[in-house]
Length: 147
Image 1 (tube, one colour):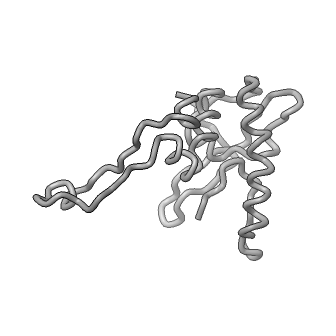
Image 2: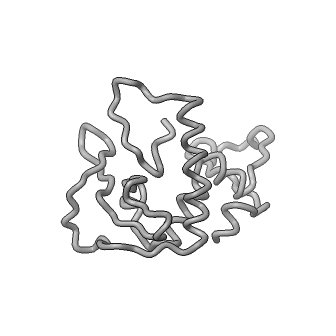
Image 3: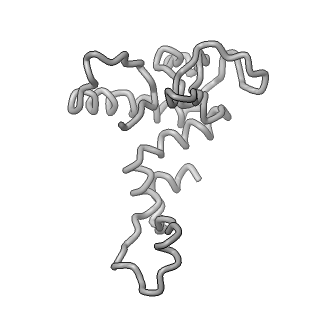
């Protein structure tokens, strides 16, 4: 799975919905991207790698801050997670009293450390190319929203 998100040449066709799926005439020519292309274009490869490396929940990975990670010690300590709040959307919360979530220090395998070392300068370059709104509170998230 970890290799597939980076190198797979298998097609990753989009899922047709309702009217598209039920139409009698075939859709226009469509060449699906490969799994690797899709994961790269949607910024999923690093996310999947960290999910596999840590065993954390999606909400915890999405709430991960760079300050939670010690690359030299190859560890991370969760300081929050992302939750959906009615009327606000996804929000990062600091307090996590959910007993199902992992807590404490988590050791990172070498492949996760390499992924994070590669990701940090890539994110910095993206922020320079497309700076966030100066009025917005910007968290130093490992996996910020693409929007």
